[in-house]
Length: 157
Length: 157
Image (cartoon, rainbow over all chains, first blue to last red; front, top):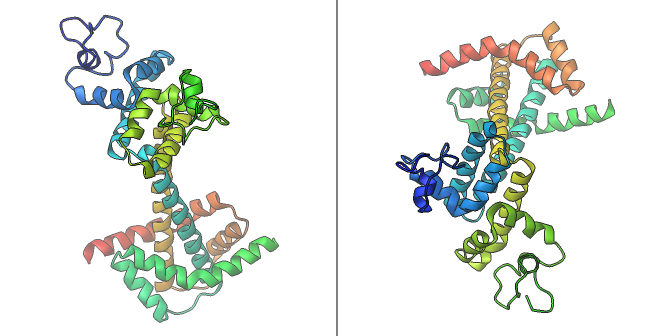
Protein backbone atom coordinates (compact mmCIF):
# COMPACT_ATOMS: atom_id res chain seq x y z
CA UNK A 1 0.00 0.00 0.00
CA UNK A 2 1.04 3.63 -0.47
CA UNK A 3 -0.28 6.81 1.09
CA UNK A 4 -1.62 7.86 -2.36
CA UNK A 5 -4.12 4.94 -2.63
CA UNK A 6 -4.85 3.44 0.81
CA UNK A 7 -6.09 -0.17 0.89
CA UNK A 8 -9.77 -0.88 1.67
CA UNK A 9 -8.89 -1.59 5.33
CA UNK A 10 -6.94 1.60 6.00
CA UNK A 11 -9.61 3.59 4.16
CA UNK A 12 -12.37 2.18 6.41
CA UNK A 13 -10.24 2.53 9.57
CA UNK A 14 -9.24 6.08 8.45
CA UNK A 15 -5.53 5.51 8.96
CA UNK A 16 -2.39 5.91 6.88
CA UNK A 17 -1.65 2.85 4.69
CA UNK A 18 2.07 2.14 5.12
CA UNK A 19 4.39 0.04 2.96
CA UNK A 20 4.24 -2.84 5.44
CA UNK A 21 0.42 -2.77 5.89
CA UNK A 22 -0.63 -6.40 6.59
CA UNK A 23 -4.04 -5.87 4.91
CA UNK A 24 -2.97 -4.09 1.69
CA UNK A 25 -2.10 -7.20 -0.41
CA UNK A 26 -5.50 -8.80 0.29
CA UNK A 27 -7.92 -5.87 0.51
CA UNK A 28 -7.42 -3.64 -2.56
CA UNK A 29 -9.28 -0.31 -2.53
CA UNK A 30 -11.55 -1.39 -5.44
CA UNK A 31 -13.40 -3.91 -3.25
CA UNK A 32 -14.26 -2.20 0.07
CA UNK A 33 -17.09 -4.66 0.89
CA UNK A 34 -14.74 -7.60 1.65
CA UNK A 35 -12.92 -5.81 4.43
CA UNK A 36 -16.10 -4.27 5.85
CA UNK A 37 -17.52 -7.80 6.24
CA UNK A 38 -14.51 -9.37 8.05
CA UNK A 39 -14.14 -6.21 10.16
CA UNK A 40 -17.76 -6.44 11.28
CA UNK A 41 -17.55 -10.14 12.24
CA UNK A 42 -13.95 -10.66 13.42
CA UNK A 43 -12.74 -7.10 14.06
CA UNK A 44 -9.75 -5.51 12.31
CA UNK A 45 -7.28 -6.17 15.13
CA UNK A 46 -8.16 -9.89 15.32
CA UNK A 47 -7.81 -10.27 11.54
CA UNK A 48 -4.47 -8.45 11.66
CA UNK A 49 -3.27 -10.72 14.52
CA UNK A 50 -4.42 -13.89 12.71
CA UNK A 51 -2.64 -12.85 9.49
CA UNK A 52 0.59 -11.93 11.26
CA UNK A 53 0.70 -15.37 12.91
CA UNK A 54 0.70 -17.04 9.45
CA UNK A 55 3.51 -17.32 6.87
CA UNK A 56 2.95 -14.86 4.00
CA UNK A 57 2.27 -17.70 1.53
CA UNK A 58 -0.85 -18.80 3.48
CA UNK A 59 -2.35 -15.38 4.13
CA UNK A 60 -4.33 -15.10 0.87
CA UNK A 61 -6.11 -18.41 1.61
CA UNK A 62 -6.75 -17.34 5.20
CA UNK A 63 -8.29 -14.05 4.01
CA UNK A 64 -10.53 -15.94 1.54
CA UNK A 65 -11.79 -18.27 4.26
CA UNK A 66 -12.32 -15.38 6.71
CA UNK A 67 -14.34 -13.45 4.08
CA UNK A 68 -16.34 -16.64 3.37
CA UNK A 69 -17.11 -17.23 7.06
CA UNK A 70 -17.93 -13.59 7.75
CA UNK A 71 -20.30 -13.51 4.75
CA UNK A 72 -22.05 -16.67 6.04
CA UNK A 73 -22.39 -15.09 9.51
CA UNK A 74 -23.90 -11.89 8.04
CA UNK A 75 -26.38 -13.95 6.02
CA UNK A 76 -27.26 -16.25 8.95
CA UNK A 77 -26.46 -14.48 12.25
CA UNK A 78 -27.54 -17.49 14.34
CA UNK A 79 -25.79 -20.43 12.64
CA UNK A 80 -23.29 -18.89 10.18
CA UNK A 81 -20.94 -21.45 8.59
CA UNK A 82 -21.93 -24.06 11.17
CA UNK A 83 -25.41 -24.16 9.57
CA UNK A 84 -23.90 -25.06 6.19
CA UNK A 85 -21.74 -27.77 7.83
CA UNK A 86 -24.73 -29.31 9.58
CA UNK A 87 -26.76 -29.31 6.33
CA UNK A 88 -23.88 -30.90 4.37
CA UNK A 89 -23.34 -33.57 7.07
CA UNK A 90 -27.03 -34.52 6.80
CA UNK A 91 -26.74 -34.68 3.01
CA UNK A 92 -23.66 -36.96 3.27
CA UNK A 93 -25.48 -39.30 5.69
CA UNK A 94 -28.54 -39.51 3.43
CA UNK A 95 -26.43 -40.19 0.34
CA UNK A 96 -24.46 -42.88 2.20
CA UNK A 97 -27.71 -44.65 3.14
CA UNK A 98 -29.07 -44.31 -0.42
CA UNK A 99 -25.81 -45.70 -1.86
CA UNK A 100 -25.81 -48.65 0.56
CA UNK A 101 -29.44 -49.36 -0.41
CA UNK A 102 -28.61 -49.18 -4.14
CA UNK A 103 -25.64 -51.52 -3.65
CA UNK A 104 -27.83 -53.98 -1.75
CA UNK A 105 -30.31 -53.79 -4.66
CA UNK A 106 -27.54 -54.58 -7.17
CA UNK A 107 -26.35 -57.48 -5.02
CA UNK A 108 -29.90 -58.82 -4.83
CA UNK A 109 -30.23 -58.63 -8.62
CA UNK A 110 -26.85 -60.36 -9.12
CA UNK A 111 -27.86 -63.24 -6.86
CA UNK A 112 -31.48 -63.50 -8.09
CA UNK A 113 -31.72 -62.25 -11.68
CA UNK A 114 -35.38 -62.26 -12.75
CA UNK A 115 -37.44 -60.91 -15.67
CA UNK A 116 -38.88 -57.38 -15.35
CA UNK A 117 -41.88 -57.18 -12.99
CA UNK A 118 -44.25 -54.28 -12.21
CA UNK A 119 -41.94 -52.79 -9.53
CA UNK A 120 -39.09 -52.85 -12.06
CA UNK A 121 -41.23 -51.08 -14.65
CA UNK A 122 -42.14 -48.35 -12.13
CA UNK A 123 -38.47 -47.97 -11.10
CA UNK A 124 -37.23 -47.84 -14.67
CA UNK A 125 -39.86 -45.28 -15.67
CA UNK A 126 -39.07 -43.02 -12.67
CA UNK A 127 -35.32 -43.07 -13.40
CA UNK A 128 -36.04 -42.20 -17.04
CA UNK A 129 -38.15 -39.25 -15.87
CA UNK A 130 -35.16 -38.16 -13.76
CA UNK A 131 -37.48 -38.11 -10.72
CA UNK A 132 -34.73 -38.69 -8.16
CA UNK A 133 -36.77 -38.38 -4.97
CA UNK A 134 -39.52 -40.80 -6.07
CA UNK A 135 -36.91 -43.23 -7.44
CA UNK A 136 -35.02 -43.25 -4.15
CA UNK A 137 -38.20 -43.70 -2.15
CA UNK A 138 -39.32 -46.67 -4.26
CA UNK A 139 -35.79 -48.07 -4.27
CA UNK A 140 -35.61 -47.87 -0.48
CA UNK A 141 -39.00 -49.53 -0.06
CA UNK A 142 -38.09 -52.32 -2.48
CA UNK A 143 -34.67 -52.92 -0.98
CA UNK A 144 -35.16 -52.46 2.72
CA UNK A 145 -35.82 -56.14 3.39
CA UNK A 146 -32.86 -57.23 1.25
CA UNK A 147 -30.72 -54.64 2.99
CA UNK A 148 -31.55 -56.07 6.40
CA UNK A 149 -30.77 -59.59 5.13
CA UNK A 150 -27.37 -58.45 3.82
CA UNK A 151 -26.66 -56.65 7.08
CA UNK A 152 -27.26 -59.88 8.97
CA UNK A 153 -25.06 -61.78 6.51
CA UNK A 154 -22.22 -59.25 6.96
CA UNK A 155 -22.36 -59.48 10.72
CA UNK A 156 -22.08 -63.28 10.40
CA UNK A 157 -18.87 -63.06 8.31
CA UNK B 1 -24.49 -13.28 36.74
CA UNK B 2 -23.83 -11.82 40.16
CA UNK B 3 -20.76 -10.06 41.56
CA UNK B 4 -20.06 -13.10 43.80
CA UNK B 5 -19.45 -15.53 40.92
CA UNK B 6 -18.60 -13.67 37.70
CA UNK B 7 -19.25 -15.50 34.40
CA UNK B 8 -16.29 -16.87 32.40
CA UNK B 9 -16.33 -13.77 30.17
CA UNK B 10 -16.28 -11.16 32.95
CA UNK B 11 -13.60 -13.17 34.75
CA UNK B 12 -11.35 -13.17 31.66
CA UNK B 13 -12.07 -9.51 30.89
CA UNK B 14 -11.54 -8.65 34.60
CA UNK B 15 -14.76 -6.70 34.90
CA UNK B 16 -17.78 -6.74 37.20
CA UNK B 17 -20.45 -9.24 36.11
CA UNK B 18 -23.76 -7.37 36.32
CA UNK B 19 -27.29 -8.75 36.43
CA UNK B 20 -27.84 -7.87 32.77
CA UNK B 21 -24.50 -9.31 31.51
CA UNK B 22 -25.16 -10.54 27.94
CA UNK B 23 -22.54 -13.33 28.29
CA UNK B 24 -23.49 -14.78 31.70
CA UNK B 25 -26.29 -17.16 30.54
CA UNK B 26 -24.01 -18.78 27.93
CA UNK B 27 -20.54 -18.70 29.49
CA UNK B 28 -20.75 -20.16 33.04
CA UNK B 29 -17.59 -19.80 35.19
CA UNK B 30 -17.01 -23.61 35.20
CA UNK B 31 -16.06 -23.63 31.50
CA UNK B 32 -13.61 -20.74 30.89
CA UNK B 33 -12.18 -22.29 27.69
CA UNK B 34 -15.32 -21.64 25.60
CA UNK B 35 -15.22 -17.89 26.09
CA UNK B 36 -11.44 -17.70 25.71
CA UNK B 37 -11.81 -19.32 22.26
CA UNK B 38 -14.55 -17.01 20.90
CA UNK B 39 -12.78 -14.00 22.43
CA UNK B 40 -9.56 -14.89 20.65
CA UNK B 41 -11.21 -15.34 17.25
CA UNK B 42 -14.14 -12.87 17.22
CA UNK B 43 -13.30 -10.52 20.09
CA UNK B 44 -15.52 -9.96 23.13
CA UNK B 45 -17.09 -6.74 21.82
CA UNK B 46 -18.05 -8.33 18.47
CA UNK B 47 -19.61 -11.34 20.24
CA UNK B 48 -21.51 -9.01 22.57
CA UNK B 49 -22.75 -6.96 19.59
CA UNK B 50 -23.81 -10.09 17.65
CA UNK B 51 -25.72 -11.48 20.67
CA UNK B 52 -27.48 -8.19 21.38
CA UNK B 53 -28.72 -8.04 17.78
CA UNK B 54 -30.49 -11.42 18.24
CA UNK B 55 -33.71 -12.26 20.14
CA UNK B 56 -32.89 -13.96 23.48
CA UNK B 57 -34.36 -17.30 22.27
CA UNK B 58 -31.74 -17.58 19.50
CA UNK B 59 -28.67 -16.55 21.50
CA UNK B 60 -27.79 -20.01 22.87
CA UNK B 61 -27.66 -21.44 19.33
CA UNK B 62 -25.62 -18.46 18.14
CA UNK B 63 -23.11 -18.99 20.98
CA UNK B 64 -22.81 -22.71 20.11
CA UNK B 65 -22.11 -21.94 16.47
CA UNK B 66 -19.61 -19.18 17.36
CA UNK B 67 -17.75 -21.57 19.72
CA UNK B 68 -17.79 -24.24 16.97
CA UNK B 69 -16.39 -21.83 14.36
CA UNK B 70 -13.79 -20.37 16.70
CA UNK B 71 -12.60 -23.87 17.66
CA UNK B 72 -12.29 -24.78 13.96
CA UNK B 73 -10.28 -21.59 13.33
CA UNK B 74 -7.91 -22.33 16.24
CA UNK B 75 -7.38 -25.88 14.93
CA UNK B 76 -6.93 -24.76 11.31
CA UNK B 77 -5.82 -21.08 11.25
CA UNK B 78 -5.76 -20.98 7.42
CA UNK B 79 -9.08 -22.56 6.42
CA UNK B 80 -11.14 -22.83 9.64
CA UNK B 81 -14.74 -23.91 9.06
CA UNK B 82 -14.43 -23.21 5.34
CA UNK B 83 -12.04 -26.18 5.11
CA UNK B 84 -14.68 -28.52 6.53
CA UNK B 85 -17.28 -27.13 4.11
CA UNK B 86 -15.04 -27.65 1.12
CA UNK B 87 -14.28 -31.25 2.22
CA UNK B 88 -17.99 -32.02 2.76
CA UNK B 89 -18.94 -30.52 -0.63
CA UNK B 90 -16.41 -32.83 -2.32
CA UNK B 91 -17.83 -35.79 -0.40
CA UNK B 92 -21.39 -34.89 -1.50
CA UNK B 93 -20.32 -34.63 -5.15
CA UNK B 94 -18.53 -38.00 -5.03
CA UNK B 95 -21.50 -39.71 -3.38
CA UNK B 96 -23.91 -38.20 -5.94
CA UNK B 97 -21.80 -39.61 -8.79
CA UNK B 98 -21.54 -43.03 -7.08
CA UNK B 99 -25.32 -43.07 -6.52
CA UNK B 100 -26.04 -42.13 -10.13
CA UNK B 101 -23.69 -44.92 -11.26
CA UNK B 102 -25.36 -47.47 -8.96
CA UNK B 103 -28.82 -46.42 -10.22
CA UNK B 104 -27.65 -46.80 -13.81
CA UNK B 105 -26.37 -50.27 -12.89
CA UNK B 106 -29.78 -51.21 -11.41
CA UNK B 107 -31.53 -49.93 -14.52
CA UNK B 108 -29.21 -51.96 -16.73
CA UNK B 109 -29.96 -55.09 -14.69
CA UNK B 110 -33.72 -54.43 -14.84
CA UNK B 111 -33.63 -54.11 -18.61
CA UNK B 112 -31.14 -56.93 -19.23
CA UNK B 113 -31.37 -59.51 -16.45
CA UNK B 114 -28.69 -62.18 -16.99
CA UNK B 115 -27.17 -65.06 -15.01
CA UNK B 116 -24.18 -64.30 -12.76
CA UNK B 117 -20.92 -63.81 -14.72
CA UNK B 118 -17.34 -63.33 -13.47
CA UNK B 119 -17.73 -59.56 -12.97
CA UNK B 120 -20.85 -60.20 -10.90
CA UNK B 121 -18.97 -62.71 -8.73
CA UNK B 122 -16.16 -60.21 -8.11
CA UNK B 123 -18.68 -57.46 -7.27
CA UNK B 124 -20.68 -59.68 -4.95
CA UNK B 125 -17.56 -60.86 -3.13
CA UNK B 126 -16.24 -57.30 -2.65
CA UNK B 127 -19.55 -56.06 -1.24
CA UNK B 128 -19.61 -59.05 1.15
CA UNK B 129 -16.09 -58.13 2.32
CA UNK B 130 -17.40 -54.60 2.95
CA UNK B 131 -14.58 -53.26 0.76
CA UNK B 132 -16.37 -50.07 -0.24
CA UNK B 133 -13.62 -48.39 -2.26
CA UNK B 134 -12.88 -51.45 -4.42
CA UNK B 135 -16.60 -52.09 -4.88
CA UNK B 136 -17.21 -48.56 -6.07
CA UNK B 137 -14.23 -48.67 -8.39
CA UNK B 138 -15.37 -51.93 -9.99
CA UNK B 139 -18.96 -50.67 -10.09
CA UNK B 140 -17.90 -47.50 -11.86
CA UNK B 141 -15.79 -49.43 -14.38
CA UNK B 142 -18.62 -51.89 -15.07
CA UNK B 143 -21.29 -49.23 -15.37
CA UNK B 144 -19.58 -46.36 -17.09
CA UNK B 145 -20.61 -47.47 -20.58
CA UNK B 146 -24.21 -48.12 -19.49
CA UNK B 147 -24.23 -44.75 -17.75
CA UNK B 148 -23.25 -42.98 -20.95
CA UNK B 149 -25.95 -44.90 -22.86
CA UNK B 150 -28.60 -43.89 -20.32
CA UNK B 151 -27.37 -40.27 -20.43
CA UNK B 152 -27.90 -40.25 -24.20
CA UNK B 153 -31.33 -41.83 -23.77
CA UNK B 154 -32.34 -39.20 -21.21
CA UNK B 155 -31.29 -36.35 -23.44
CA UNK B 156 -33.45 -37.86 -26.23
CA UNK B 157 -36.60 -37.90 -24.03
